[in-house]
Image (tube, rainbow, N blue to C red):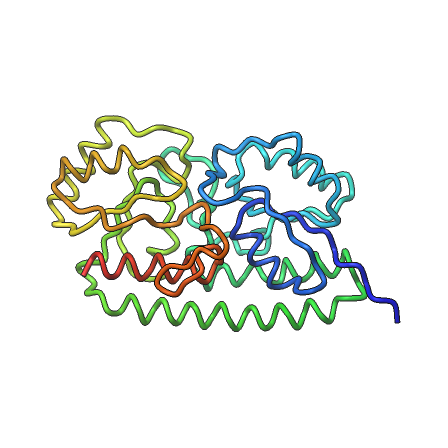
Length: 283
């Protein structure tokens, strides 16, 4: 039997790439377009990115307009008969968080609810299986293993969060990336900017957030690795509140970057790092 060549797969973000890598296993070689600290809302494809996409057997992206202008390029490639898929496509619409009064697209930050992120696995399995039918059984088995790991992680988050009294579960960050996290794990979430970082925060928004922090006696607020820190640091000063640490939101850390025993360049490590930091800072 001739060994099958691994599929050449390109993923947009680290979170998507991590999930696809785990499902593809040894039958796929996965490259990411966006590395640590890169904001997908503002990302513009380079010439080398386009070459990577053109050489790929399969392309995965988050969808829900997380990738901004890049999504239209990916959609055009998909219409040309390529294996291009948004991993969010299989999530039921009633599971998605709608935007606020400003309208727009549903909140794309689905990976912060690990049980919801697990719902993307069947789409990854199906797309890889279409691209390499001879490996369909392998991808199905891998998907089942990853699904079990993801639901185990979900239970770990629930357990860790239970250490924090409900009254203290108020999460203040740079932009509104943690809505799904708040819904799944019982947090009130307040972001200075909306679900996208494209629009900048106004002075009135900053003043309202300072008032909110004071009124609710929030113990700590958080900066994000993919969003400039200056504005949140100013709010912390004005509200006389601590910075609880740097969370990973729209990008993971560097693979092999270990902190408190967690590899910040993996989805599992990123989630455990974030949750541990949030719980300890708000205690």
